[in-house]
Structure formats: C-alpha cells, structure tokens
Length: 272
Image 1 (cartoon, one colour):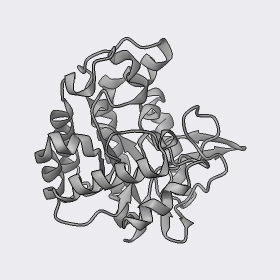
Image 2 (image 1 turned 180 degrees about the vertical axis):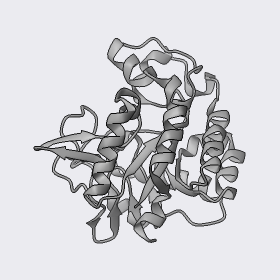
Image 3 (image 1 turned 135 degrees about the vertical axis):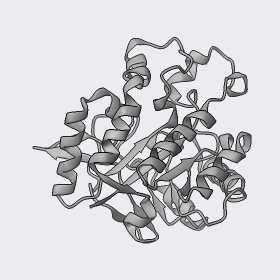
Image 4 (image 1 turned 90 degrees about the horizontal axis):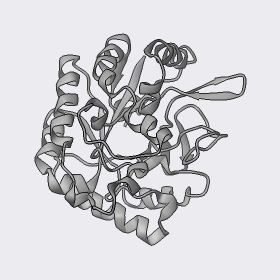
C-alpha cells in the first residue's frame, strides 16, 4: 500500500512550546538551521527513491527561497503550513485568511506547479475551527491534512473524527494523521514526537495495523527532528521531553521507516 509521507518545513524555534523560552528574543534573532536540516531529509528521500509532501511555512520561504525551489525541483509536492505558524484557534476569520493569502503569495511565487494542500500549525483544525475549511476552499486548496483523530491531547484533536481519508466538507478532502483504535482508545502513530517517544518496534506495529485495516499511513516529521545539535531552550521538563527526546535517533528511524513501508506524496495517495 502506498502511504503518505509529509514534512512540515519550519525552524527549530517555531513550535509553540518554545516561544516563552526564547526569553523575549524574536525569531529574527535566532539561528536558521532549516536549510541544512531539510537538505538532509531530501538526501534521505533521494536515497530511498521516495517522494513526499512538504508543508512549507511562508515566513521561512521568504528567508530561504532557494530551499523551496530545491524541494520543488526534486519532484516533491509543496503544500502550505501557514505564514507565521500561528494556531488557527488563536486567529479570527480575517486574520486566518490574511495569513493564508500571504503564505500562498510567497510560496506560490517560488514553485512551478499549483498548491493543493494545507496543514494547520499545531494541527489546529478542530471542532471549533472547521470554519477555516471554507476559507481554504475559496483560495483553491483541495485537501487539508490537519485533523488528528485524538481525544487526549491538550492542544489539538477531533476525538470522533474518521480515521480514514474522507470528505470533511463538500469542497474539501481531509487527510487525517494516523492513529490506531484499540478498544476505544486512539493511539497516535503518525510521526513527530510520537516517532521519538515510542520504540520503533511499536511504531512499526501500529503503522502496519493501519495498512492491514486498509488505511494508508499519513506520517509527518519536521526537519529539526533530525538535528540533535540544535540550540537548547530552557523549558519545563515535560516540554523538554516533547521537543528534544531521541533527536539523535530520528535519522536512523526514518531510514528504517522508508525500508519497511512504501511512501509517496499526499496528492498521489488521494488521486489528485
């Protein structure tokens, strides 16, 4: 089964749990490491002859446009990850539309093809922000991949959402992140922090179950997760675990993942 691999292209300091730890120094004061880290991801994908969808942050595309062009020229799909990496739950309708339009303008001007997909920062298409889907459709987006069908995460999740790819509105396909239902408990296996926190054997077991149930895996990573040498921010203990745990193992695990499963970009999986 062909599964969907996605890369959320953002900097190491863009996650919301790091913002307070930046001690008032804005993004412009931070070291940019995404160029090197994303090129590492591109090299791994090239070795395994695998294509992926790269959801790009508009703020980053403005600063390293050559990287977005490299991703596009390598034959990967380019999607939108917003402009300023602000959760939709923290924006008004007008603010979200302005952020989306700015990202589309910046990124659309760097690539050859059109943009089909969107992923919300922090997966914040939730039951309270479904209104954003109509905004996406008005601006030509055909699929969203922001819904995490979870019930226990403090920041995101739609607990009763479908586990399979489905039409979330008449004009929008939803490509939810992968979870496995065990006796009513939904266990995430879609990548990111879960890829670092769980033993690889457990991740492989859960992903294989998705395929046995007839569902393509929808998996994600950030380039900064392959960068164990990134600067360290003083965070509460639980957030240090969420952001830094097992960074040194991700490159090995990503190679294993690409050996054990067949992946491609989201557009190919959903047939657009």
